[in-house]
Length: 96
Image 1 (cartoon, rainbow, N blue to C red):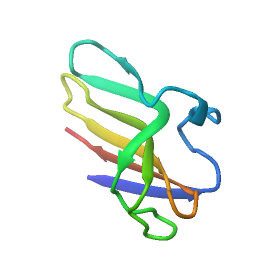
Image 2 (image 1 turned 135 degrees about the vertical axis):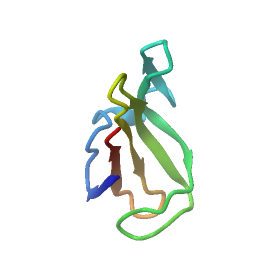
Image 3 (image 1 turned 90 degrees about the horizontal axis):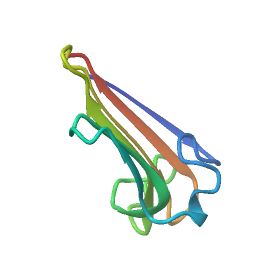
């Protein structure tokens, strides 16, 4: 499994105007193989990569799925810290 993390002042995967969007705008293949979403965010207790805060964080991007038939899987997400306001993007990828 490969996991990478990036902290930034601005969103990495969420759109720049994400705060003005509904909480969660979902796109999916409809078959359960993948789902991608972005939006103003849903509460999340993952720690901020910059300051470690877990209070008031919002997940503003999510992308998960797996490919068929090779079995690769991924789960990447981005949150906005409720304390320092920085963005933490985490990507996890596993070959099938």
